[in-house]
Amino acid sequence: MCWLGNVQVAIDDFFKSKGLTYWHELSILARLTEEVGEFAEAVNHFYGEKQAPIGSPIPSEEEEMGDILFTLMCYANKHNVNLRECVLRSLDQLADEVKAKEGAVAKKFGVEEG
Image (cartoon, rainbow, N blue to C red; front, top):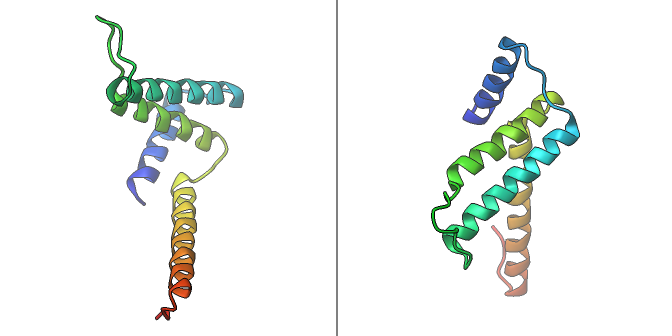
């Protein structure tokens, strides 16, 4: 099991050990949207033209990414979704897309694959 699966299990174990239940789906979605917005704000303050107001704390990109992952894992746990498998499927799809593009480029320039 990779770290992603370990963290997902740890979150579920924590919820169970404390007698907590996962939030309603729409509440999780609202929280995820809020966290993505906070991540966008952090990125904008660091890389963009919008500066944080003087004296205002700048959100940490790392903290916001952690909040996003945590919230997404809560949703996945509530629905018994294995995020490791989801990520591996996405990686497989990307590999297929890259292979198809490489084949198209090779064909365009008359290069045989092999």
